[in-house]
Image (tube, rainbow, N blue to C red; front, side, top):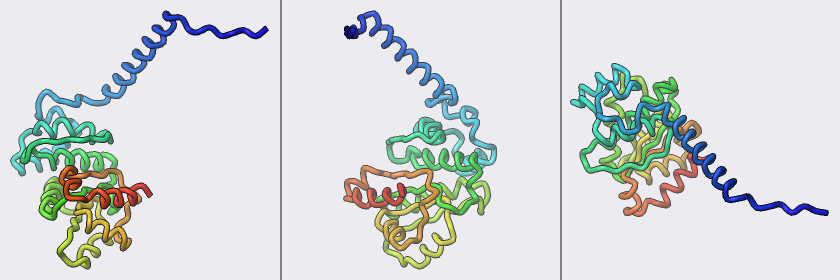
Length: 221
């Protein structure tokens, strides 16, 4: 005679739910235990031990004495390789909010002198691409620590091609010109670790969605 299984009692279901909640809380504690805080109480550099003295010195030369709120809240998620969507007002320090943790992660991994593209930043305009590159260059410890190459339309391809073929750890560009270089085989995305869409909302409003998707397909290869 076959024995029919009995549905779990209400008590059993409650126990299972409690166990799952406890396991979820344990996983969250283990994850956040590795981080001093996702939202430090202030932006003092002491709250960010991953920032070496030379970086703090560079920030000081940029008249930055502590991290702004968006920089505080983005540092650890980006440094720990998490996906982030962030927004803030113009002038709030958004560029440094992603540039700083990206570079400090690459420093930690000791791969900044590889001349292989490790991070790409896509921008909607030439002006923004130049601004982003300026910030990446300002936080170098030495002039040759890494290369940040910028590409955008409206200028000849030849000089950009020469720079790209020489290798660059950080690659910044507008979507159309980035696609041009990708289709010509001028960029190697095989070592990409980070993709940043700067002012993503503006890129979507300007109709760059298909370009972005095409570029990301190269990243996934």
